[in-house]
Length: 167
Image (cartoon, rainbow, N blue to C red; front, side, top):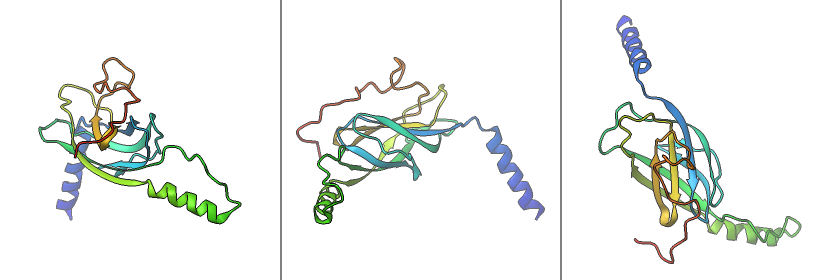
C-alpha cells in the first residue's frame, strides 16, 4: 500500500513540475460548410462553427512540454449545410421531414491526423484547428490571435472553394 502511495505522489509531483499548460480547443472555419462538431484526440471543441467563422472553447489540449518530430493530433469533425434556408416550418410535417432529410443528407463525417508544428521556445496556448477547403486541416499551439501579425497561419478567413479537390 505504501508503494502505491509513493507512486501516486511521484506522478503528482512530476505533473506539477511540468511546464505544460492546458488550453482551450478553438477553431477557425475557412469554408462555406458549417462545422457541426469537432474534437481533438477525442476532446470536444464544443461549438458549432458557421461558415467563415471562429469558435470552440472546449477543454482541454495540453501540449507536451517539449515538441518532438512526428507529433500529431487526430481531428474528427462533421460538416453540414451552413445555412438552413427554405425551412417549411412545422405546420406541414411531411414537408418538414423532407426538408430535414435534405439537410441531413448533406452531413459528412471526417477524420484526419495532422502534424503539430514545432513550438520549441514558444509559449503554448491550447490548440486552434483551421478547417480549410477540400477537408484540409492546419493546427497551431500559438498564443497569438488569428488577426495578429505574428499568428502563424495566414490563410484568409474566406477561402475560395476549388471546383475539385485532390484525392
